[in-house]
Amino acid sequence: MRMGRGTMSRRGLARWLPSGEGLASRRDANPSLWDHSGYLAWLMACLLTVAAVTGACTPGPGPTPSTSPSAVVAPSPTVTPTPTPTPDASVKPERPAAMDEVSTAGAEAVAVYFLQLYAYVYATGDLADWGDLSHPECTFCAGVTEEVQGMVTVGQHSEGGLFEVTASRSREVTPGYWYAVEVEFVQSPSTTVDSAGTIVESFPDTKPVWADAAVVYEGGHWLVRELTPRDGE
Image 1 (cartoon, rainbow, N blue to C red):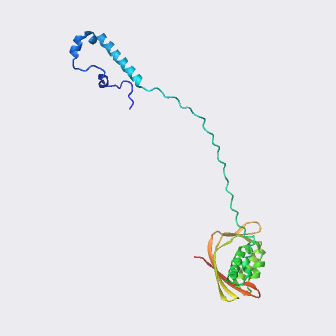
Image 2: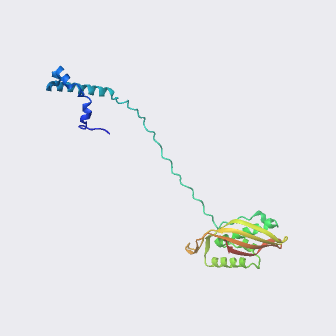
Image 3: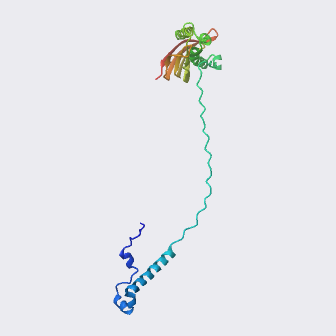
């Protein structure tokens, strides 16, 4: 702790005064030391001696460290992330090459492609490929066709609702003819809008869906005999 002015105790000052032992003999031997003027002179001499010793022991200030100018750091440029483009349901999906073969893989490709056409036909009203793959007795296929035609009549279409297929499997029921296919997928949110762009209906949830499809190779081409969607677990 730093001691300020006037805080020195008598004990601190006494270490510079003669000890009590032999004071009388010293006073007798040198009376001038103990008279008032002699005492003051002696005390001043002691204080000057202390100041000199203390000054000699106190280190002087060290050299002032040189300071170099701080380097100017240029701010890092702000990087604006590129937004991920939203998939457009009005873009027609690509027809898989596997549909050209009559096999379990071919039947599986037919079912997946048919489901990918679902969002496309609702977005565009283009039912050409959907109709080519729909069996005349397919109830689900006919229901979609009727609904899309009704939307086109009143000037409505859908936006969004694309399917992301997560898994698919197939098995041959009747060799070269009948195949059972199961597809798992996730359907994105969608909206129905009118010709002015006003939202008529909204489906905001992303939902997992399973679809069981019966696919047949009949008359030299593939057809979806039936398709039954059900909510995924």
